[in-house]
Image (cartoon, rainbow, N blue to C red; front, side, top):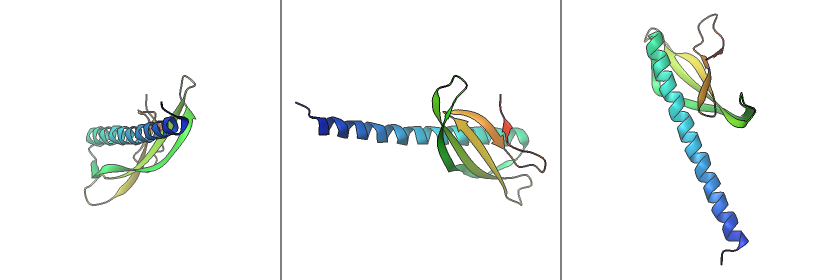
Length: 110
């Protein structure tokens, strides 16, 4: 017979596995989105990866609680400089992108 401590341990392991999977999936989504965005804008996506800046719960358009993932990355417009940018995801949907042009701010995506 399974007792309460064993059920709690199984639940904890499942929760940790979900967090790890969700983190990897969000990072994969952010990397793919940045590669596409840089290709479209003829920019160089430096280091070919994003780094996690923050995670927090928010409500999506339907009112459900989702995690908002904010990532930082570096890109170059000339190949000889480094510029900072950011990308935001709610769940695994890109909701904002900042490629830090002089008059550019965080731009919501459709």
